[in-house]
Image (tube, rainbow, N blue to C red; front, side):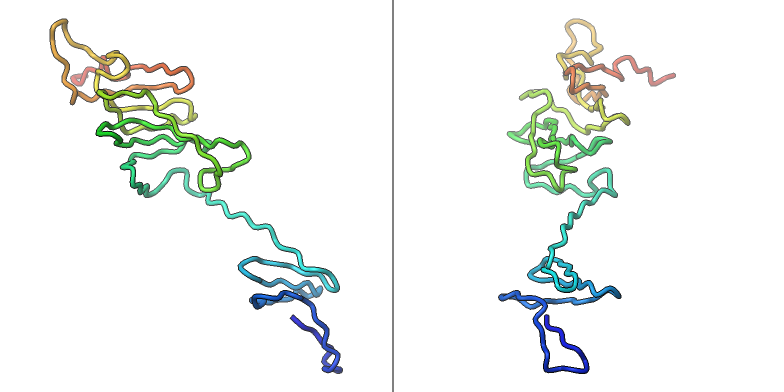
Length: 193
């Protein structure tokens, strides 16, 4: 970028000294501050000063949950807690559906799209019991989980001794990730009420 007085066009003065790429989208305020892009970055420059790169951080925080989760690992049913820190989802790995909890490892990271380190853990690992459809409670501390009565050491079963449970019998559990305790919410549900 160069400047010169209109009355003296031969007095050309360089304003910027970038070497490899052109300056683009140049604009100037009434006070003479320049704003432009160079090599994919945005700069401002006061009169008779050096350019300053503008720190820009884009954070998409207008959606509390993922609208469309696509994953090559077969993940589905993803939900984000109310504070946007943990993410719970179901994923089929090794032929068995399990629930996973992904957490932002660094407190400095504001959300998942900007997280530099994410820790993943299997909630209640099992090779025989499948769990699915997690949903965070409004305070983000509990998870509602759909599973068979066999889940959580069979606390959801309501059958007589000697009977075989129906693995397709879906139950709803409230699970506390902090204490690792579950409550079978629908165990005593009476549909005739």
